[in-house]
Image (cartoon, rainbow, N blue to C red; front, side, top):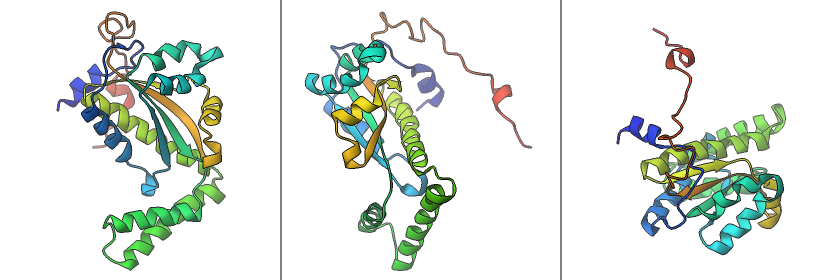
Length: 221
C-alpha cells in the first residue's frame, strides 16, 4: 500500500457512474471498516443505514429536498449511500451492553480489569455529561472519527466516496425514526465509482490543494 498514492487518488466524488456497482465482497469490507473504527474508550456510539436499492436510496434522498437538492443525484447515482448516526446518550444499559460484548469477545483476562475498564469509560462519559455538558457532541465526535477512518479505508479499496453534511438531518431522523431509537443522523456518505469525464472535481481537472507542511507542522527536536 502506497499511502501517498491513495491520498492523492481519493477526492470528494461529485459524479458517480450509476452503471458501476460495488461487489458483495467489497461491500462486506465496507461494513468491516464501519464496524472496526476506533472510538474513545471503545464506546462505539454509532449506527449505520446502508441503502443499496433504488427504493432505499429514495428514502435517503428525502434528506436532499429543497435547499439540499444539489445532492440528490449524488445519492441516487451512487452504488450505496450510508447514513452515519450517533447515539444521543449513553445510559447504564448501553454501558453494560458494551461491557458484556467485550467480555464475550475475550477482551478481559479477569473481572478486576473488566470493572476497571467499565469505571474508566464511565468517568470519561460523566466528564462530558456533567462537567463539560457536551455528551452528545462527544459521541458525535466518535462518529466523525469513524468517517475519517472510512474515507481512507474505502479509498484503499479503490472505492470513491462523497461525505455530505449538505443534507436535511432532521428529515432523515424522521424518515428512519432515529430519535425514537436513541439516535440522530450526523452525515451521509455516498460510495461507488467515479464518472471522471463528467466530474469537475476530479483531480485530473481540479488539482488538490492543501496548506504546505512547513505551515501546519511544528517539529520538536
